[in-house]
Image (cartoon, rainbow, N blue to C red; front, side, top):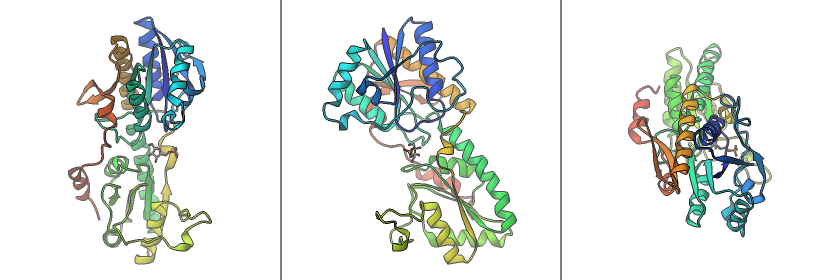
Length: 341
Ligand code: F6P
């Protein structure tokens, strides 16, 4: 068989480990051939390929990013996109596809499968918010990077008697904020799932200062205050009407200073959380996903996504994976709240 592989959406540490496992088992054990599609769905859409064999995957296990490149191109939103993909797969003699990606990429995979393309999905996101898998690779690496950053913020916060805010990724789910915040002993953790009360946050800040220690607040980029609090001032908007004061972290610092009179600073970790070498946990999980995905293709079990349930790698329908986001449940947030203030 000739199998196409692509990586779509935001990159994350462990993508190369998946590609390596797919090719090593696929070529070495099953004798299949591979073709790499460049930059997510843009590859099959434009017919942009690269050679993908055992030689091409040598030495990539510890490397962050993806040797295939990535993009957020969505062929479903492009007129005639699906037909062009089908034509290009035929031109390149591709019998089946392995799509490694998040909600968007796997959503496209599902629609292609419904239109006759043989595809198997591998879940990926540092946000850990994909359904039907307990963990996604990249998450553990992101949490460890954020944890180390927060550890460092504690010491400088105390030297300067400041409140320090660390803004982490997570537009719709607060998994990174929750885990990094718990691991690094944050005094407050704010997540998108629970609108925060700025009065309560300021109370925590003030009570923490009374203990001689400085407060550390971890906030997910998608967290927001309860309605009516922290209104954006017109001065905070740029010429296009975009909020220019920055994200929620900057706005929080501004509001804490205004309300408590204490100095506050924000560190936005941004794409640092997505770059660099994966942790051991992510390398192993990504490798196991890659091995399971190529086995599913070899078995002809298409329309599936591999996932982690407990300690086992399972196959679930692509629709189960993309049906809804896996957000932080209330009881998990309550565990962290015990340590607030
Ligand atoms: O979904 C992964 C993610 O890293 C989010 O946490 C973040 O909001 C987004 O991607 C950033 O995307 P981009 O790299 O396109 O700015």
